Image (tube, rainbow, N blue to C red):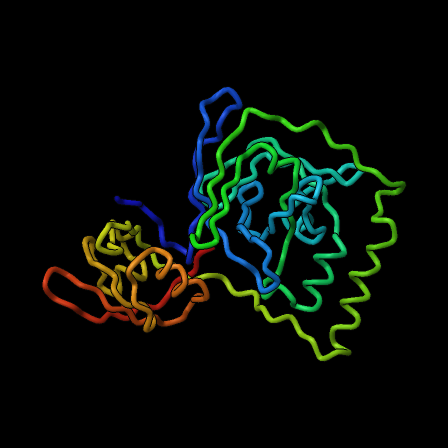
Amino acid sequence: MRRAWILGCGLALLLAPPHRADDAPVSYEIPYRLTDTQHVLVRVKLNGKGPFNFIIDTGAPAVILNESIGKKIGLKPDRNGWADFEKFEVEGGLTIPKSKALVLDMFQLKGMNGMGLAGVELHGVIGYDLLARYRIQYDFTEDKLIWTTLKFNPPPLTRIGAGGGQGGLEMMGDVMKFLAPLLGLKPNYERKPRGHWGIEIEEKDDGIFVKSVLPKSPAAEAGLKVGDQIVVVVKTDIDAMKDLLKATSRLTVGQSVKLKVKRGDETMELKLELGEGL
């Protein structure tokens, strides 16, 4: 069994053409991770910008996006807080055209970000309106979710509540953010871009191999070549894709990385400095 992967900035956003509702079911392998609060997190690009961290929340009625991110990417919500996307891309190849989101500072996310509870900054949630279009298979022993398209369009959403508020609960986010420094709590994440390698890799039955190397990339400058088998990264033995993802998930731009590769019968150690990517 072989699988092709792009290792660009830790994980690259693999894009595929959007599907139509009348197409045969299509399945996507969506990379995910669990936050420190055990929420399922996926990465998303909005109108080609990002990636941003979204948690999957079947209890949320729709896609909800933090106001600061909405401003950052230039969205202009209507009077009820809804904003349209030309393209909503979930890491793993899923592209959803012409979708919409509610631009709103959820008190839950505001409080979690203020206290650093999740271990990563959260930018929004993916709710029922989008999730209902897919059958989602969870297997927490694997590093990907399987999303399969359904011929189902959920009914249009109507926002409830005068003035578009959250029934006064939005104050809880500000309270938690205010209490965090008083309790000695600081966000336990830093905003650092992931490091760029510049290689395409593939998973075979006997390990992880380099499929292609971008010219003048950090990988090329370090001496990686097509056909090299990656066996160790930062003291982590690499036997499967999940090992490589775990070893590289927190590597950032400018960081030097030691790895061991097999090239034919020869084993060698290489060192590369990660470049800038997503």
